[in-house]
Amino acid sequence: MATNWMRRTVVVAACASAALLAACGSSTIESGLTPDRFIAFGDALSDVGQKGSRYTVNDGSISNWTQQIASHYSKTIAPAASGGLSYAAGNARVSAKPDVAADATTLTITEQIDRFLAGGSFRTNDVVLINAGPSEVIAGMAAVRAGTLAPADMVAAARMAGQELATQVRRLVTAGAKQVVVTGTYDLGKTPWATAINQVALLNDASSRFNEALLVNIVDLGANVLYIDSAYYVNLYTNSPGSYGFDNATAAVCTSVDTGNGIGIGTGQVNSALCNTTTLLPGANHNQYVFADAVYMTPSAHRQLGDYAYDRLRARW
Image (cartoon, rainbow, N blue to C red):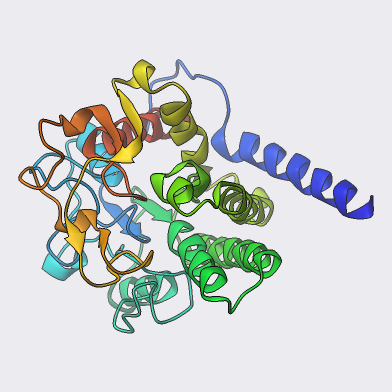
């Protein structure tokens, strides 16, 4: 009984903080912000090509939500590896190493921020985009399936990782970031991967606990932080795909099998970082699919998430 009461308390606090940080409601006030730069930190959800490709269908389009936001302001965002200001890297975790594909060279999100701050500082009109969560949940699930972590401990680890992301968001604000847009993880229980491994409930729980911990621990940062609820928006895709131009929300459209453990869900799985328009299901229109691989989204899904985030950003600042 006490546990249920505590969970309800956390959920209420998370919902309240989400409302505050998202500045709920549509605004008719013209945005006063003209961003100078977009700076990004995160994992595969925000990676615009750190190693040359993105975790989506690499079709040459604007295919990442951070790019889509920047495009609304006639700005671009490029990977730090090619001189840009997006440090987000596929498979990155908030602070743990190696990454979910066992690569110890991938910068954690904490290290990404370290690298930016070592060579620069935030300007008044910068917009900082930061995400985490998918890699943390994938890492936990891998440990559960390997028998090295109990499901309850996986959920607890996801909650702790959400707190760690909140610490990094707070660090950005302390370092001078005036406009920080943050999102956690969408519900990995909605992915083709969850269905394939019969772990819908556990992945849903871990995803939710990550986001709740993030929200509860940034609730006092509303002046500088805008929370984008990617879980809410991806739920819309999967619950009513036709409303968003999709006709498939349950299968991956890519066929680019990775012989290694490229996205952390096991060897021999489809990895959208290897996917382009020649590696799709026969006759498939990838813009009508939500998922590129068993975890990550297609360009259309990214663009629509980016449009949603832009609307929230414009209404806020």
